[in-house]
Image 1 (tube, rainbow, N blue to C red):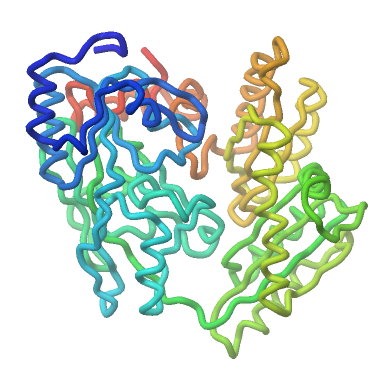
Image 2 (spheres, rainbow, N blue to C red):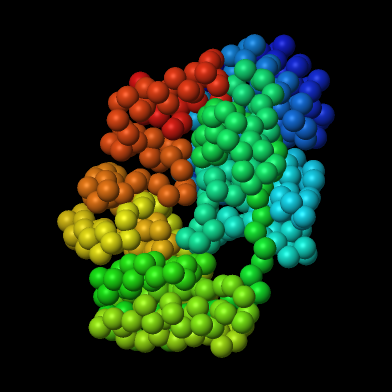
Length: 465
């Protein structure tokens, strides 16, 4: 069923039985907002439903199977790859109203929540008991836990604490046939059967719809210190990143901003940065109050090299906030400079960061397209921003050619095309550059096993056949 095919009257009647009037949208003007995500791609769904229970999701999936109707699950729409855009029309099921706390066991360091709870709400609950959940995307105040899991979205703390895959114990989900699925454990160890929990995390709703998750919690550190280091060049900053990650103290955040990004920041936000700055590192160290100062000293010592222009430790909460404001000012500044920018989240080995940035500079000159780079340097996850103006004839096509060259460069450096944004539509047609034909065939087979009729989030993840 495509965007232009009306929904069968019998199916609409089934939806009305499953969902109350306030939980079912069929008017195009009501459905419109649920046809896009932060990629700015849009496709109008034929109907939108708001699930409130796991059983509702099961019944919905079974009804969609019976009538052959595509079903796309979504959280809050903060994704940047078009993964929740219903490209074939059909039904969108929003899980944003499934936001209940199911169980909280501080003694066992886990919490079970519904998929629609926001990341920030989860953090607020567990913080009162001295814990946090490590994944912290920039959109944490608004994005949902289910969306974090669907894309394996991580954020700065992943360098020390890992991604959702390392911080999720178990899941409740509904397969593409409408079957109930409970995978994972409540314990820190468990090796019974295949690891379906990690398989579902990052699958972008193409295998099953996650409705509930048991998350592994981490105790809040007693203290945290923030360091700013400025370097003459990207190569100098990358050398420091390698040195920092090679010593025993692992920072809880290690953020990188290149010289082009610093120029954008200077133009849009007040900051004290020398004009000779070619790159900046934002480093956070956490741990026991009695030890964190020594840990920061060791990290700062490892960050020293001939290209270091300035390094300083924030001595107050206001200074910490000011330092991180530099990083946070980037996204709005870039959006202002180029509303149609392409934002990718490639990953390379940390030692390959200089080669990546140098290659990106060459591509920028070759395609006459500004490229701004920043990201999570500790694990080589760099956000590459192509600043295009889609109103200029030919520039959109030029940007797509440049993007293909960026992906080719990343793969030549033993990198990967996505660290945390996922595949969705934006990278769908490139993943066969990274994955072998046999690997893709096996993945398609797994998709058929979970979703034999292909109704869950169709036309995503794999290149179209």
